[in-house]
Image 1: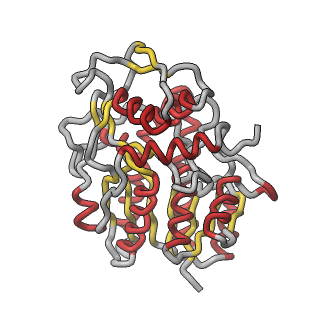
Image 2: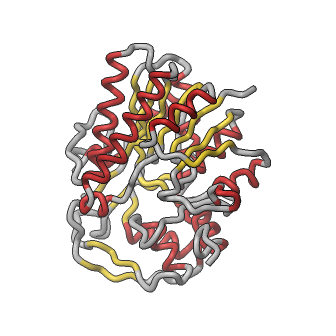
Length: 347
């Protein structure tokens, strides 16, 4: 029997790609999700997980569960023996977090505390946490390495990631037999090469590339580019975009690291290369063969000019390195978007 990994928020964009990689790597993922960011498929199975099953040809264990539901969480841990937990569940829209800070802190922080309590009660002491480069705030220097100061976050979403990192670090300090890998993602884009699973934002996309893809497929009229007067190659914001499959493989490498009783480790997952908004638009035009209309509008509050990773530590300690280039990211994103113009929903 292969080792079971609990995947919280496993029906979401990054979670579902990690579930697929877990199966490919010989693990048995057990997925929980409360459908906050996921579309229901048949038999109350999330559509993303139904499609992962189709790709891998094996059943995925799934339970609809909210981390704030303590009793159900304890039941789940009684039912399964987990080697480790991959924790993706949480609210994740930056703009919304500014409007609803209490909701973000309640769901993201309390949910994580409940999860850690259940892990402690059932002697599960390994966790991979889905953190974010937002914990670095406005970069003091570039590229960003793991020693860069953290906590200067400009919104409650980023702060919730930072606070959770601190909580997990404190647990590892207090209990030396715990192991944690905190993965600070840069900007995940793309989709599985099958075109069956990908990013399906509910409502208006918060992130650049799903928006660009929706303009290309005709779902949206025009892209707003927030500011063209930054000190960058063409005046537009520069970010480090990473293929979601590379990101998912980083989680498998993190699981292997946990088996070394590594204590608490932190790694950036990025490519180390920054691309501007207009460079991304051009790359997507090339991949899709479509013109992407855009207009320049005022800067958005809280946006930084440039943000990209120094991913060397992950390469040295995890043996992980991003393999996919920009063309591949955009081609895979376009395959997903063109085959699923309205995402996972049927309308």
